[in-house]
Image (cartoon, rainbow over all chains, first blue to last red; front, side, top):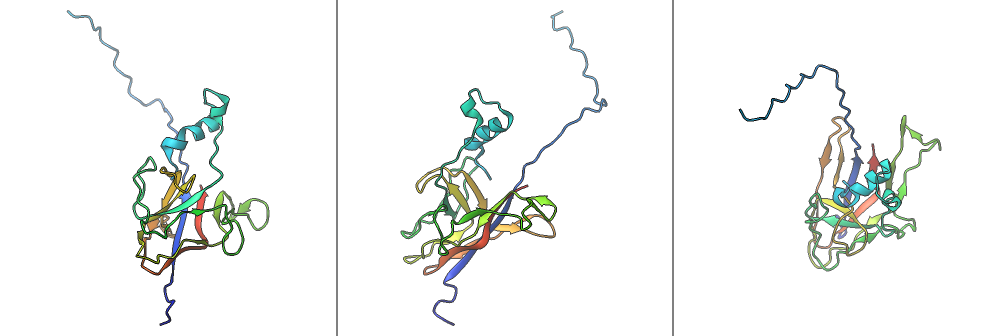
Amino acid sequence: MSENTNKYVYLKSKSVVEIRGGLSVNNGTQKKKPEAKDSKKE
Amino acid sequence: MFNAEKHGNPILNALFNTGKKTSNNTITFATTPYLALFTQMPNKNGTGFVEPTIDEYQRILLTNPGPYQKQIMKPAVAEDGTGNYEGRLLAVVRNQDLATFQEAESAAMGTIVGYGIFESATASTASFWKELGQYDEETGKFVPETVTIGQGQIPIFRIGDLEVKFA
């Protein structure tokens, strides 16, 4: 083995910066929220 | 990943024109991007990282020429000049010259887990960072790959091995 074996050590980084998006569609199947009850005390 | 706390709002304001002042709708980075190595990755705010502590270690100014006298980082250009490559638009920057750090002469540098981009040689908050490694061609998953730098060794990003792509 030569003196310089492994003298250089190689780094590697190949990365992808992902730009993600999420689209939410209201398809009309969502349950209707119950109407707010009268908050007045009895 | 980008430092969301530092750059997230400026990027979003620029995209959606949502800054209160016109000046808030543009984003600029320092013209002195420095490449650093990490033995411990930053937290989400770009702090909390650990760089090698030996005397010889120093960040690399990426606008400087490398050993082949080329500016280290360069946008990737499609060979046909149309901006298309393999059916996809390119948004890629990679190194066209060697990114060579100082030899770990006095002691081992340790196990390098990733790199960061800083606005100066001494900035304490990273603008961008990523682990060492690459994507598996079959699974598409990022496979981290740490590298241990012993005493007498020189860490190098060979040409094309420091790459960031937007997708």
